[in-house]
Image 1 (tube, rainbow, N blue to C red):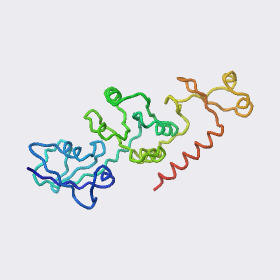
Image 2: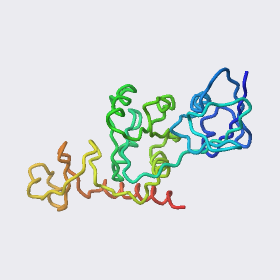
Image 3: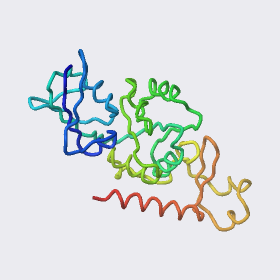
Image 4: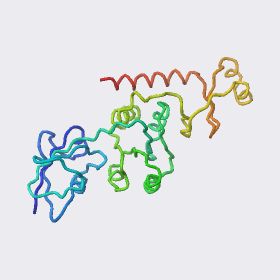
Length: 236
């Protein structure tokens, strides 16, 4: 049997069942094994992995692990300026929050794992899920495993991971279907507005896909408060 020793940094220790982050994790193995295979066998998806290094040099996930290797594994940090997300069917609230913040967040509540993988093969989005095994599939090039169960904190995690604070543009996407909104003249919408809405509001946006109408009602103030909480937590 061969042995290798891994030192996982930062919140990668979230994926390890029992581990002291100050200590190395030992793994025994037979034959020829890649770094990707051994790290994922410990429960850490490859999409969560940043720099890999041994005493001698930097490594990549295809590296064939040698007996008595000591390898340091850093968490991934992937700044992007054109974040396009694909969310699994358990993250509907997070999808709404990301859309509210202006990000392209594709979500349907009936998509199963194989559907998500099929979508990724023709549309290179960032997969967001709590299913670490799904992130381990080879076709997944970019992805993030949210840690929290709270959708608001999940939004913090995603924005921090991909360094997206400066790209927040609230109220530009439909919360229901993800389409970019268009401004609309009140006169065109009058047949679709309730009497009090017609009386008190003059600025409207509409989704050209599902025809959902948006205006700055009481819900708008609640969303502003949510956005403020999220952006404040992203400050250093």
